[in-house]
Amino acid sequence: MSLIVERAGFLTSVQDLGRVGFRQFGVSSGGALDSFGLRVANLLVGNDEGAPGLEITLGGLQLRFEDERLVVWCGGEFEVRIGSKALPAGHAARAQAGERLKFGRSQIGCRSWLVVSGGIDVPSTLGSRSTDLRAGFGGCGGRALRDGDVLPLSLYPKSSAFVKARTHKPTLSISSWTAPHDWVTPAKPKPILRFIRGIDWNRFNASTLKRLTGEAFTVSPDSDRMGVRLEGPELKRVDESDLISEAVAPGTIQVPPSGRPILLLGDCQTIGGYPKMAHVITVDLGVAAQLRAGDQVRFSEVSLADAHRLLLELERQLELFRVGLSLHTS
Amino acid sequence: MPLRLQRLDSARNDRLMEIIPLGDSALIVRVRERFDDAPEQTLDKVLCALRHLQSAAIPGVIELAPAYTSVAVFFDPIAVAKATATPGDGFDRFVERIRAAVAAGADRRRHRRAASPRVRLVKIPVCYDPEFGLDIDDVARHANMSPTEVVRLHSEAEYRVACIGFVPGFPFLAGLPKKLATPRRDVPRKEIPPGSVGIGGAQTGIYPLRSPGGWNLIGRTPLRLFDPGKNPPTLLRAGDRVRFRVITREEFESFKR
Image 1: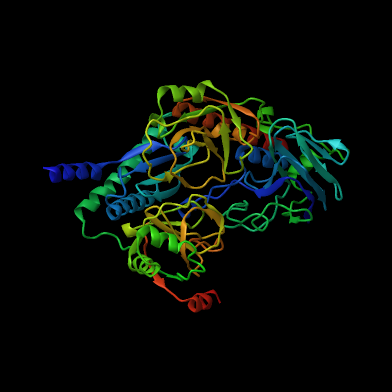
Image 2: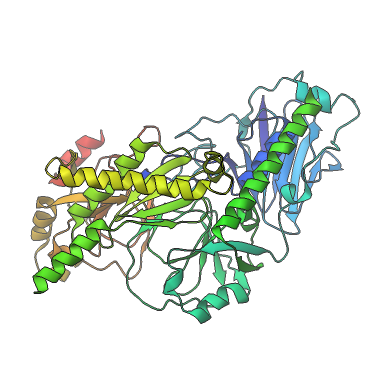
């Protein structure tokens, strides 16, 4: 059974948790820009955490279901409707055959992740079902979705314990169960992203470093899945010497000679030669993925130990959540 | 005296190993400060570090990626934290294990300097016809030589892949004859056909995919440098030796068939 893409919207692509092991060949990790959000959404419909879903940028998507499925979305503050009902983030809906799901505009944030029980059944390329839009492979033919696409869905028996436990009342169409609010709607109006110092931190003088933490930056329209370009305070380097290219990663804040920093996201290239001033910590990447043109963003420094502690704590909470869900199923 | 200073300096460079966080889920292991002064030696050191990190199979490591003077180690902070019994101690232990793995490799290398690992030589056919070498005249003018001379120099040299990046499968090749070094174009092209061979500054490389780019184009190869349907997906990998072989337009077409 399939999912019919009646309207593909501004930019929608198939994404899972990304590609691992191919950076040495220049292949980006890619995947859902908020991998945590995708994992939570998948858990909420009873999928494997890494099942492929759709990443929706700026809304406009309209889907039609061919069979009965559970569906959940997480991400920015979008208006989403299933049939005639509003579907809030993080709540599972039981979509009936023939029913339509529509993504409107977002109030805050710019991306969301939609998963369907069973997951989207596209072939795996280099170990992942994610679309690499820049290199043109993976996902749905290596490209963003188009109107009229038909996405095959993996089998998901209606008799599964998960569905039974959650939709035993035939009248129930939208679940009351959900995940913590911050997990399903991480978008914030004026976010503060936490960072740790980068390798080239000392190539900037004290007053420039102060600007990074003391001033607000504005997201440029020239931003995409590769990176968020930031306008506002200029961050000029002390020395102008050429650096030897080395690895960069999602979260890296690199500063080209223009002094306008770029916060790299999941589709960023694997190496770079610009100074790496700082790195946004992993737990804040989901918030970073919501930045859209015109948004204001600030940065605050944490230690590497704190970054690790925050990540461990979040994983521990997710583990508890996972156990909680499975207890309710049995 | 200057010679001696240089030697001391290179000895210090030889021992260098910096391990620097690249965010909270990756580290960069730098084995040398510079690349251009000794590309061969540097690449061998990087590959040696890469091999020893691979064989050490340190728990928590997700993937390794070499580039010029460094190897990036991507890791799972959760797995690293769980690898030790004492909480909060996992990351430091992890860094120590990386340091030990790379140092052990460097030691072994010193003892068996002659037995440097086998490096692949990959021959790449290139058609340097003006149809493909859109900027060969600019390169020739900059080098104050004829386009024929550019082709001869470019195809006679031996190169090494310093790094794969920019786009999947793009090889940054070290070893370009100094005379051929040409600054990047002022205005980058919006679209460069796959297989295009270019010169950007002191490096040469091949565009594997249709992509934008600012390098001076001097020819084109019919070979496919990136194929996501294969594993490994690239024709080349860091450390490979590369030679270009001049082919005619007809040969180019027959390769394509």
